[in-house]
Image (cartoon, rainbow, N blue to C red; front, side, top):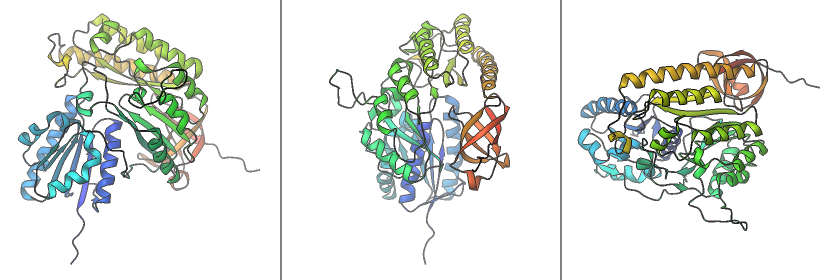
Length: 451
């Protein structure tokens, strides 16, 4: 009698890097003969890929784990895994808190999942959080999309922002070689993927740990060099990259984005605060004036470029006057999208133990005021799309209206229009915009005229 294959479920919290890691770990589980299960409470192997950038994401993980731990008491062969940043941060302390766990593994160990699970199958409770050199990514990810794909180019982060837990949990910067990145992109192009997002926690730092200097003394293997190197991969129609750091964002990179037709005119560059003293306390390494110059330069080269960013309000010691400078910067630049957050103290970060913490009421009030301004400015920015013809890469059906498909413009604006997903998925379609909202658009497909 053959036994049914074990079924697995992966739940992902947090950033694009985590989503990419989850796809790689799911690919490993597929290769091990396990089958995907959509319901975490029906799966035999449950993996939570966790985020510790804010406290609420971490608490959500613990509530999910509590329910699975109860389930394990009735189903002892359930395998429970915590991966990602909470795993790295807490390590063995997680086993004391949730003794039902089988495997605790940090982000650097994602490619080692099979080896670690084999140790679990031998009856061990395993903690893998030691710093290692990340093995070259030879896994075949189980990708969520058939149209767009993430490609990691650099792991880790060497920055030391005083609020951020990422360097402690994701380790030092490790760049993949340009050849390995291009090979992965070529395989994706052959599989029919149309859009690639190159990923790094601090992507502008790409290549700093790789050898190579030009005859003129310029360092080779920068992100700019990588864009030129991978730009002509067959089948790939669009290239994006994230996340950028203003400290390393150069005019040479901006010029490359303007010159290379496949690179989308969309830049995600967090500014975090509009006040120089707060930026200094955050150890961000730039001023608001430098940030503004970067945006001005982008708009000189690409006037229509979409700009998105991240901002934190209520950082320890932030005064109302300093907060107003964040509001002013948001007003002046007019972001297409701004991810906002109230400051959340994180373990083992310098700012968490400072005595000048602000009250939750003040943080909440500032967040609400900034969010209102973000919505107003995004709606203003959207006006430029009115009646325009935009190229949309169709990704999926509109979950709220099955008669419509959805995709993104080059500027990363979500766009809906009537159409059949079976015919249009993965196609680049010309769409005339008819309706405008702050963060999305609706339009009508332009039918090409057949001569």
